[in-house]
Structures are given as C-alpha cells and as structure tokens.
Length: 312
Image (cartoon, rainbow, N blue to C red; front, side, top):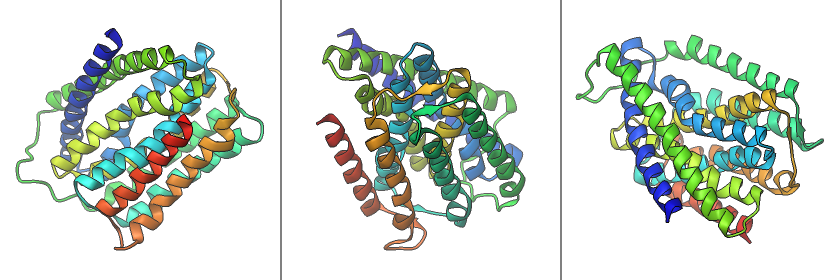
C-alpha cells in the first residue's frame, strides 16, 4: 500500500515539475533570444535527465551496475517509443532541418560511441566516461554558438516576459519536483517489482526507466498543450543524448560500470539503436519533416513489443 502511495505522489510531483520547468524554459528563451529548440536541448534536458543521473550514480555506487545501465538504455527506448509516441499522437509535429543535420546524427553518434565502448568487453571504464562527457561538452558549445543564430520561434500571444527571479524560481522548483517525484516513484515501483521477484535488469529496463522517463513525458505533453512543440522535440532528442553522454559518462567516471546480465548487450542495446534509427525514416515518410499520429502508433507498437519480450 505504501509503495502505491509513493508511485501516485511521485507522478503528481513529476507532472507539476514538468509544468514549472516548461514555464522557466520559455521565459529563458524569451529573455536570452535563444531558439526554443536550443533551450529544450539544454535547460529542459538537463533537468529531466537529473532522475536518470541520480538513479544511475546511486545504483553504480551501491553495486547494482545493471540497474544503472538498464535505467539509461530503457529510458532512451521509452523516450522515443513511449514519450515521443504519446506526444505526436496528441498533436503532429513539424520537424526542422536541424533535426537531420545535427540533432539525430549526434544522438546516433552518442549511441554508437556507447555501443563501441561497452559491447566488446562489457565494461564502461572511467576514461571512456570522460570521453563521452567531453563529446557532450563539444556538442553543447556547438549548439549554443551556431544554433543561437537561428530564427527565434513564433511565440503564442500570451507569452510575456517573466521577471528573472521568477524564471530561476520556476527552474529550481521544477527541477526539485522532478527529482523528488522520481525518487518517490522509483522507490515505490522498485518495492512493488522486487516483491514480485523480478530481476535487477528487468526492473531497470522497464519499471525504473519508465519512471525516470515520466519527467520527459510530463514536459513534452505540457509543451504540446501549450503549443511549444520545438521544446518537446528538442527535449526528447536532447534527453537521449544527455542520458548517454552525461548520465553514463559521469556515472562511469565515478565508478566503472560492469555488465552483469549479458542480455543488456545481446538484446536491449540493439533495441535502443533500432528505435533511435527508426525515427529518421518516420520523419520523412509518408510526409516530409513531419511526425503524426500514425508514426506515434508505429512507435507505440515497437515499444509494446519490446516490453512484452523483455517480460517474457
């Protein structure tokens, strides 16, 4: 009963945090004249990736490496197969040119870098984590230097310039609510899953990863409802990049991560690469540079199959 209460309270805090975070992100993009796609890939992605970072570091330090890896791999699959799917079912998204010139290639490069580091020896070492984190830093410098010059998005008429202290306050409140909500949700979910006798890898790749992806879902759904679609696309692509390069990069720099369950390497990591690649053809077919409800149904079907096979 207590686990269920933790889950419900965690969900409430995550939804509230997503709303506050979006308000802050829009305010910062207005104040700094930075395109919202960049804000989505930096400020929002950092905050919504915080649960994955906290969970992965704690799991690695406590001696549960499969929970740390399963959390990130599962979150990246859930971000595209569940969060993006729900987002585009709620409202179609026009995709920018920067998606296929910068965002998607960097996400695939980060995924392949992680694959190359861990697949052959089943170990993510400290120097490999450092390389991943340096790659993230270079990407952020590129984003802020070159994409800042892009045309600022059309803003809804009700957008007004929020005082700076309010923007910072909403950012802090949003980040704190997301963190606290994720802690409660994971605590409750892992408690329920453990009582059912499910393995550490399965808990990480399903329950924990979905739990830590709820901030992305909350932020993206609020973005769609408020017509801030640039943030929702940038947030999801950026979050996957952050999960790999920042979460696993920082975690493995603190404590090297060793794969305990080989299924992570023989199965789960290929699902992550596959669904990441699948986004590209979906963006171009049947309509160019657009994601609609049909694409959402394809992604949901792939994600459902992944969960079904993982649990069986």
